[in-house]
Image (cartoon, rainbow, N blue to C red):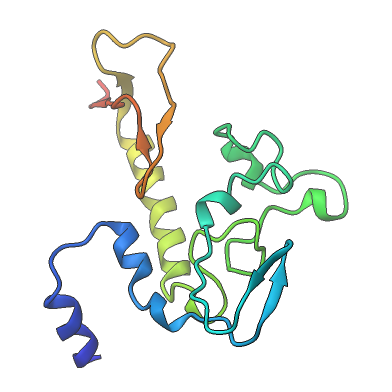
Length: 160
């Protein structure tokens, strides 16, 4: 762990995408193979595009729309009733990575986000910044980091 800390501390602050690629030189194909008609020779560096997986219309209805309810369990039976697995076994959605390289803090992260969001909703009343109407533009700008095209500001106010 000490060596790892030293290596990371010697690097300048990095955007998230750079941190995701850290150590990617060790992820290589071990045999020649063909995937979806593309020949991949042995020794080729492999990157998994988690952004594209999360927006694949084959795996997701309305893949480009913000629909947080898609992650809730639904009534019914079979695979359509089950929410996507965030633990790296459902390869349509990999927010925490997968298999050996999965984030060790996944359970802590999920619990912390739920507690934080519940506290924010409970303790504050929320409104949009002055001058912003109901038609908020939620479109995104694509690049190494995903961000909103227009900045969105919510104003917390103390109830009372």
